Image (tube, rainbow, N blue to C red; front, side):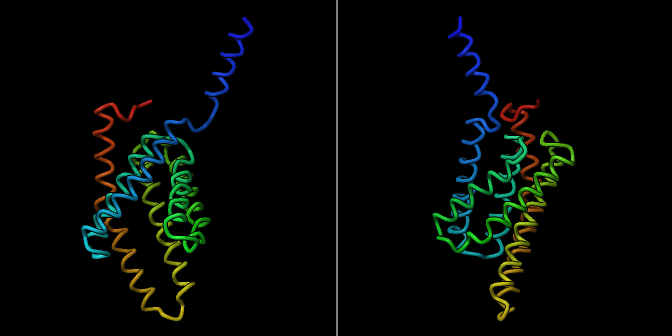
Length: 194
């Protein structure tokens, strides 16, 4: 009798964890999928040309919307951002680690906007939060490049044009595509309404 009570207490203790294994695996899979698709589009597109930037950022935003709508927990953007920071650190070294706190702040602000605008079950609040995350993370990256390359403003201007073009891809391609992906995945039962 006591063993059964301990087992049920152990099961209930396991249910109290905020992140389930499924959620952690989903964040890891989507982080890897977003990285690989960005790399593949960049390689196929021949580098940072306008079309590949537009498509790559649109696909990244659409997949991020699907991830946030699938996991639907506060902090999912922070967790995604942390996983991407770790992946970036291992892929490129410690150069990008200075952007880590700023990106996590952008993710936290976006999570707060999603929670305040109607929660994670509302697709429009998720769209607003992901759009804000894209804007803040790109703005922070642009500000960081301005601090590093102040003496050469032409490089900052070129980077700003690429960031603006990428954000337009996120807005024009990514948000509508992410909305349609979520709608179809809900229809298919892969994203449940709860």
